[in-house]
Length: 150
Image 1 (cartoon, rainbow, N blue to C red):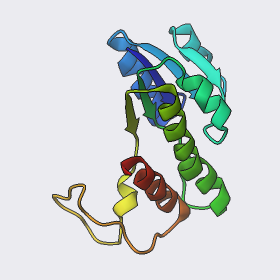
Image 2 (spheres, helix red, strand yellow):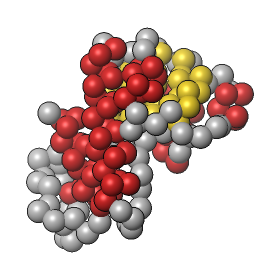
Image 3 (cartoon, one colour):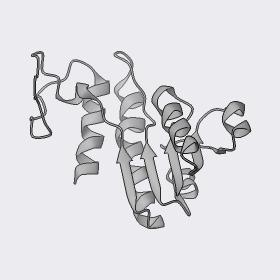
Image 4 (spheres, rainbow, N blue to C red):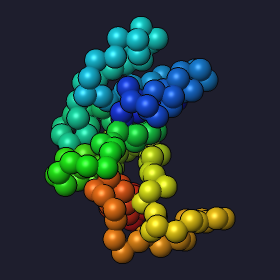
């Protein structure tokens, strides 16, 4: 399988890349930085940003599955910093996947998208989103998740 991992140099993305490589898949990574260790392991590295539709479209060309792990995490910072990557970037990934005929999109969400201040045991995907968020990260991730689910 030819796979693309957005954010493949990051915390979660790197583990996705390793697991794909370990099972013999061809892996392409779209990342903002340079990761020589990924290139040395046989990964195709494309420099780009999910905020840029053209770079996402180039990265999606010829792949069967996209693992979308790129995100801006954290609990402080301006709305635009989170929204542009976590929501609009996800929108770009969806659009590029459709345009390139990608068969599968695996979206990396966060448990924080449903956090409403109370514990959730035995929760499933039917749990509602909260009416308010404590910070921009879970809010923008929830907006991106809604677009993926739609």
